[in-house]
Image 1 (cartoon, rainbow, N blue to C red):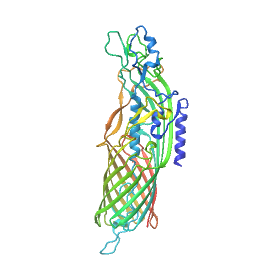
Image 2: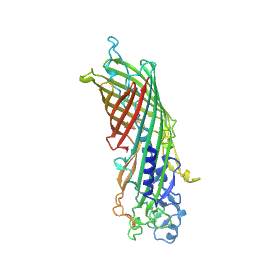
Image 3: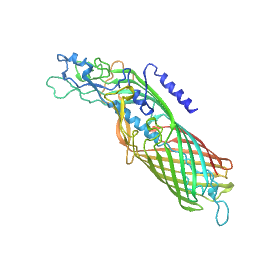
Image 4: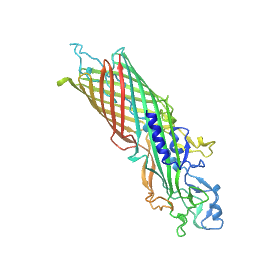
Length: 493
């Protein structure tokens, strides 16, 4: 079902810009960049005349600026696209996983033989349960999550604007006596994106001892991205004002040799991929256990078994040590048990193409090698979660949590913020109301992301438990999927 939905939305986005040039990206992580290519296969960066020195309005000026061989392309737009691409990749790599803890744990008071309070609750969903499942016991679990990312830093992904602030030097001078060359003017282009991710993960947990268990999880991931680029605008007014050479289109243009300062439609691209994600191994041991409180420590290790270039995996090994705490009240009226819980962990990852930079290949062998990628550190993530389970007898449990991620305390995440180009003039052909403001790379930063989680667990029969949950995003930092549903099944034996 999720695959059919992805294809429908991808088709809608592409039909909306049918007049634009459609490109086939080699993988999902480069869809955004390939949407910025023109029919010639070129990236619509600002072209600046840097090869032949020429004086404005001097003899030979027209011949020089009419020769496309004298122009070179800057990489500003590629760098802006890389910032957004890295943000998307990082967001996709830190999606919370449902806990592989058993929904049914039987604990009895050794003195009286009576069931302890923890036997009533069916456990949390995203927060790790401090209890282990018991020596020799198994737990099998499955869950599904579908993410539709709709905003970036609070702005709709269908209404982004990228800004190149200009200032790149040319080889054009205002007068023979001038010592400083004219520089490029600001430029913007519109960007619309549709980003979706579906994750199905299966877990197997085994109780090695009464206080130690090991879990293995393997997700199957479907990622899909569509993008279109439009309304490329160089903010130089009419482009040839005689009283101000700084507005001359000859300094920079989308099409060397003629005054092309506006491109209504540039390109579209889309791609989707399904495959195995990163293998997760979790080890957890109880270090303190009393009838009303349990404390455990453990670690997650993610192995790079998923294809990072297609957003199926992170592309490097990640390690996350964590601590989990569960508390239990005595049974209240009607068998109600309250179980506050808390966990915290810190994920560290190595270098991956998803953490590195993308750049324009100056001599591509074909259209699939327009861009090259380097490796860089995937941002570290300090995660915490806290909430409460409300057990309504032994068959029903309500769960409410707050989940937090502090991204990039050590290895920051690339980010982009809206800035204004300043004193810029719209060229002829620009749409009414066009703005010279847009997203500009601000380098690596650290910021927090927060979600509310609201779930319900139902014991269907025996040890078979159904899980239902809604994850609600509470902030606008980075890439945002506002509401994410989850459903799953778990069985212990």
